[in-house]
Length: 153
Image (tube, rainbow, N blue to C red; front, side, top):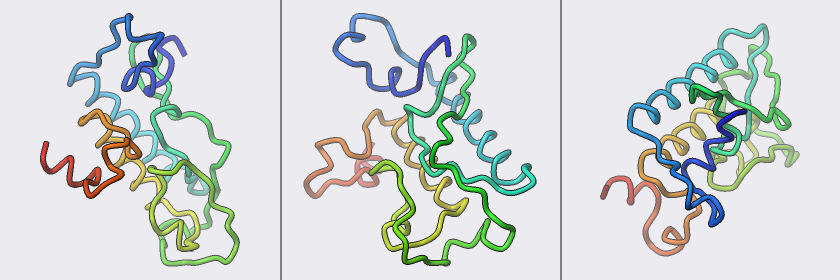
């Protein structure tokens, strides 16, 4: 995609810091709406619900007009109607993979993939977009959490 991924806009690397990569509030809101629309389509408009399972800034691609597109469906799961909204189903297999900081906590306890996991990841993505900190930023190693930081902000 012409404008790369959201990760490069939120957290430019040392090589990119000289380039002007700032997102306006309107661009951030537009990206948030684009991602929410994509999740709505995946969860509610497909024949079988699709759960992305790895929603994070590096998987949000930006086109020429800064429209956001959800990419990298390598960990995606198709859900049957019975499990598409049920987050209480558990499994003994550690089949859920993803990125620490963006995964829903219930996945760590063996819960099956659900649309709720993507919604959790989207919430973390929104916090990151608007407060500028990754969920695994080193300032969150102590007693301060991402949630507490957002409340203070």
